[in-house]
Length: 489
Length: 108
Image (cartoon, rainbow over all chains, first blue to last red; front, side, top):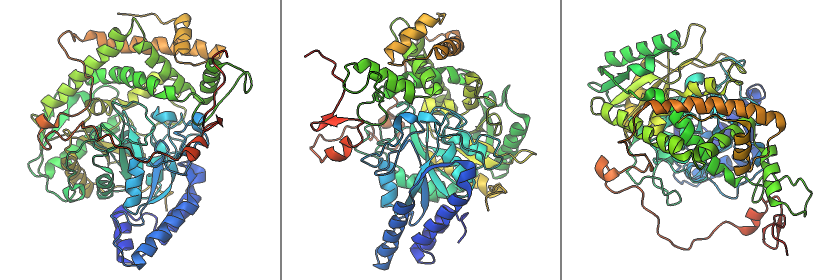
């Protein structure tokens, strides 16, 4: 059994008894041991717990019990998701050593599906970033070129799959944090409809935007994981009770006659010519597959970055107020224990525990919500959000899905944008609009650049139309199989 | 509306957000915040006088088709087992008498 076996191959072989969950886990652990030192994709490897879980699954099979749809499939979990008994830091010093007393609902569902929780993946601190350079535990390296960023914020989840340490991981996507790293690492990444997947146990960044979703080496594998984690959760009032479609079955469906929208606003200034050529070729492939390609207009696209940074940072400034040194994580008492100064304790804890990007966003968020500025900035952005959502409502009257580049450039060099916050934010120009509208989107590998860097095709669909989106993704994948980085053997 | 971000403003925001900033950090963040505020002011190009703000992302599934009324329901308020207090307090930097311990903040 090779480490590059895909999700469904592992699960079906474990279910059929052709291999054991233990062997699948050992293969993944060996791949992590071999590569994690160089890539820094995993922050924590739960070796013993994973092996124990694998043995329990093998024992279950030996007793003749039916195994779940992810039987023996090792999966990495973004460190923003709580895992009972396993350190969860969200990439921040302020949560160093924090051991959650409960599992996020998505993690509990993976366990119930007999997946193996193999470890926690690196990320930008509190999911704020597009390169993984904002992790308090060092950047992740892109398996295609270790001098380049894997994207972010779910960079560890993306790199772990790209390097074939595991066939699947979970990430979270607030403004592109699954799709953009998927594009930059040549993996499949899905951001579901807002409300499709429970966020209970996801350390909150921006609650009107955050969604959990899978990365995988292939579309079908990602579809199977999405099916497992989707659905209503009584512990998350924003989760939707709409029936969960058979995403895996959707992967085999013909896309003949499907209408594909191409927004010219996504092929504007700033788009790398090689990325543009790759995505235009991908759209031609879909046309050859029988799709009808039409131009659509998404006129408010260029306002998405500003809208997003006002809204996401406002929500973050509120969500991150909980990190105050009282209930979990770091506490710094400047005057020494027992000396009375609660405010000073909050300030010193947050000064020592938060990184620069987090402070920057908390300050902007505080500003746009503060007296005298709320209407001009926060309320204004909420109104523009309505316009961005309407753009999609209008476009989806004409087309079934919309295709575009996921990211304007291939993977950039580590350090290249780290001192220029605005340049970094513009990375997300093509992923933010779908996040603001709450619609599902995914990134699938398209033809790489001449120098061999991955390029991602973004497919977005109307609310709860993940199945249709995945039909297109799978049909494209069949014509354009994903490549494996040279080092991941 | 255009706003000039200055040092005093950044210090005020930091205070509201319980952030203590080092000297050089305040200077850098003032510069960066000024750039960002200038950038987001491009939203003023749009006339939104007749646009409703998006205040909830909850899908109106009734209107949207597939699963009428399936979203946004609150769960039944039933008593369920909660987290183990011992395990939960074990994560606190300091605890005392079965609760989270903080520095004294009222005069006795």
